[in-house]
Length: 504
Image (cartoon, rainbow, N blue to C red; front, side):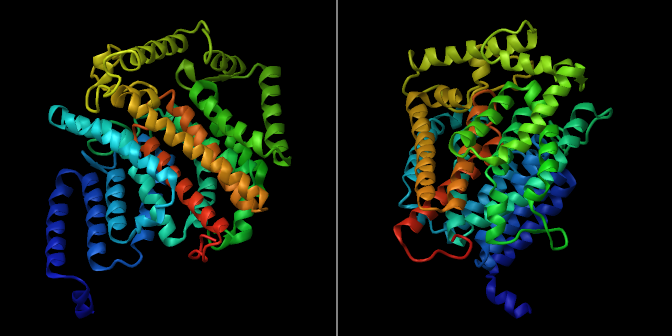
């Protein structure tokens, strides 16, 4: 046994293992959470040195675990680790390492979206490197807005490497029941807990820290999945088994899943205008391209809920007054999107955002920062005069698209718009091609990614969302899945040789 292992590992590998052991032992005494991340990253490096087979699947599995943690726990999970290396950065490091050794990036050479992504990354790097010396770690912190785009490269290449596009979609359907069962009580606990929720050592957020807009984006993706009937189509390909080998089909329990969905959507829809718009955008995408019979169950539930609220004047207050769930709150939330409501916190927040966004447009599109932007690292809230926190913790405007404009200038925003536009148009083209060829599963997968993407885009326009791991890593992972999905279909319709198992 020892001889076999020694044959696979070099002396430097054993030396690195010993050094890792000493580092973890010391770190456990200072920062247990950091020790977890170092162990994870170090184990990945050792696995690479010892054996390359199976590494793409390992990297994808670790990233999948991170995505699950972000969706279930929100910002709290993002603090697992030690600054500046958190669990998301560790997963990215491992993915890039595996990609460099066994990822076959050349498999993406025919993807026009990939070239647009590389252009966006290069412009982001050009707006980052000059400011490293001045702002230090803050530069790297702000640069994740574009640097997390590397997740798209990793996910796309590794999914193609292992032939795991359909398997990734199946894994998502396995995740949906857990998400729907978890979110209603988790949101109530987060809003109403009579005691402080536990925190990770050194973290500024509780372990459970869910934002309404973030939750709404995932609910939008789940709604699109159910409306398109994808669990049924994926189950036809390979039966989905869960908990003791028992088959779980989401379509068998439609009433339960939709009831849980509406329960989870209560706070995002009634309180957060970005959440309401994100869900509406995803549903609208499905409605425009795939109207069908699966709408009647959620519509019946929606009509029943609205009737009860109006008939019995239901008003449920969860913690703060802004968390009131009532027909009036929903109406005010819709009204606040385009006009004043008479409520201070809604109108003030809207006015503050619009003034800041206009200021950004003035000093970039019409001002001295047209070509360069202000760069990554500067605290825009302080520099632009819109800081609202005493500790200057707010760094970026509540709009990821305008954040790119402010930091990368017009070239950065142009590259961003071209990248997202090309991605959306490619999905639409692939959808129409698959639908015309009778490839129902692939057609609906394209539409699902498009609907999910639309929800991300909407929420990013109202919040600091893509700038954090719980939003940014999820977005770019979905983006990478979309690139792999497009490439698999391109090969199918081009009549190329059969793909690895799971990609067919």
